[in-house]
Length: 299
Image (cartoon, rainbow, N blue to C red; front, side, top):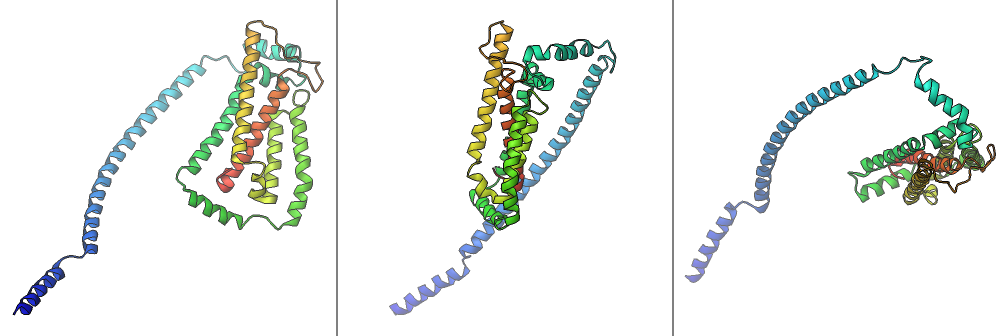
């Protein structure tokens, strides 16, 4: 009798279990319900974003029209192009040509202009290069995990030119010559055509050729991301501090301890030579940095 009662209770409990939804079904049901909620939220967000995009477009067009109109109104008050009575033709160019060598001790008047008279403009240009490279780094590294980077590195290693003797032997002959020529252009920028921008581009091309011939691993041994940051920041800091000292002493009529040397000598023109070196370093590093970022998305 008791055994029959126990069997009856077990049968009822098992029957109840058969009618209960499984955990998988419950999860699936809740997941389906959550997905519908998310879709409703997405629809609301999309409607808000569409209205914001329309508002943003209208405001952007209005601001662009205002800026363009302001610039055109300002340009209308500028002197006519090519007029011999313009202040630029009477004062600025005459100052650079007549007194450039006397003031800067640089035979190359262009170097004297961009690294002495307008040195802070050149500092801004070099800083823009560094900021542009930093922005590309941020954009490329924004949504990638460490595992994704490692997987991409393994995939890229398959296509490196590890066994190309012609390319490697040719690079061993050409790269040193290109580097020496780039250094020559930088060091002689104040006494002959050239300077930091052109010499830095030449040196950057040499490092790119080395990377193509020997691969990323070999290049990273002497040019890593840490070295890239330290070199560029040091060059920009030296440039800013040295020219701040130069402008401060000049504006307050204080004697500068930096000798200008004899015009035409390699060690002349005061700070123009070291500033040319700083600009060459920044241009070289930035040029290779952009190549490396677009080639393998890292330096």
